[in-house]
Amino acid sequence: MSGTLTRPIGVTIIAILLVISAIANIIMGFMFIFSSFGENPTYINNITGESATVSGFFLWFNGGMLIILGLIYFWLSKLAWVGSNTAQVIISVLAVLNIIFGFFNLGHGGWIQIILGLIVVLIVNTKHAQAWFRQYA
Image (cartoon, rainbow, N blue to C red):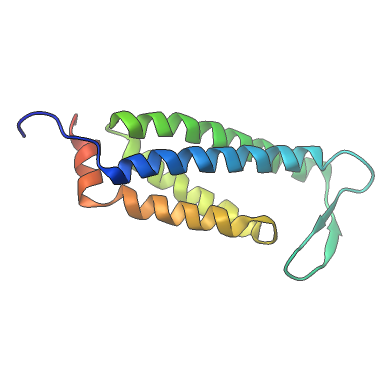
C-alpha cells in the first residue's frame, strides 16, 4: 500500500453506533440498579403484560454488566476511530454479546440493542472496513 488509508464512512458509522450503544447500555444499567430499590422490585414484560418479582441481586448484576459493557463500547469507539488492529475482532465479539443481552430485554427496548448490534457486525466486516483495521498490522 502506498500512503495511509482514509477512514471509510462505515467505520465512522461504527464509531457513532458504538457511542449510541454505550449510552443505551449505561442508561439501561442504571435503570436496572435504581429499580432494585423499594419493596418487591417487579419486572413487567411489555409483550405479555405479565409481571414477576425480581431479586435485587439480578437487577444489580445485570445493571452492573450493562454499565461495564457501555464503558467498553466508549473505549472501542476510540479504537475504531483510529483504526486499531484488534478493534475489528473485539467490536464484533462485543456486538454479538450486545445482541444476546438484547434478547433478555425484549420487552424493554431489547430490539434496539439487537438491531444496533447487527448493524455493527455487518459494517465491521465490509472490505473497506477490514482494510482500515488491518492497515497497521
